[in-house]
Image 1 (tube, helix red, strand yellow):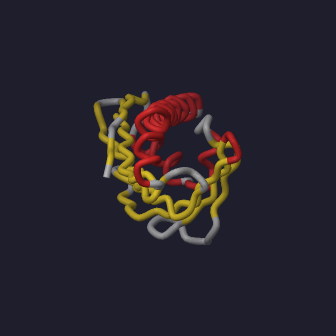
Image 2 (image 1 turned 90 degrees about the horizontal axis):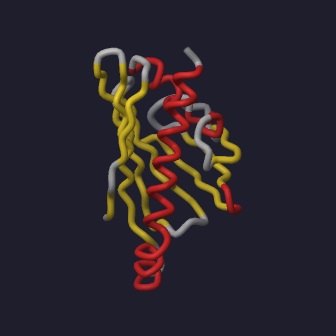
Length: 147
């Protein structure tokens, strides 16, 4: 498994940040890499699922596999046309005075053996990291502008 971590500080209490993260069907409102998103079952919290259409005709189907209100949420990619064999995206919230520190740490494996490893080293890693930075910046802008 491969992982990395990105962080951002948001000028809002954890409850406000959590409201955006826990509303899994509406990630397209704040993640610039997501064109459209919607829930695919009636479950709120653990076991909730969503579909995301991404730029470049890519898609993700995800399930909430960890749900600790105002502390942590993990989304597992259950289906995708992207080169992930498996992937969990871990979000962690930490209160810091009037701010919330948010980290995102994807943990993933790439498909396609040696070809996938080469693709990862030359393209996927930089694109994925850039996407996670954009996701955090979008979350910050969304939460802070809602106050």
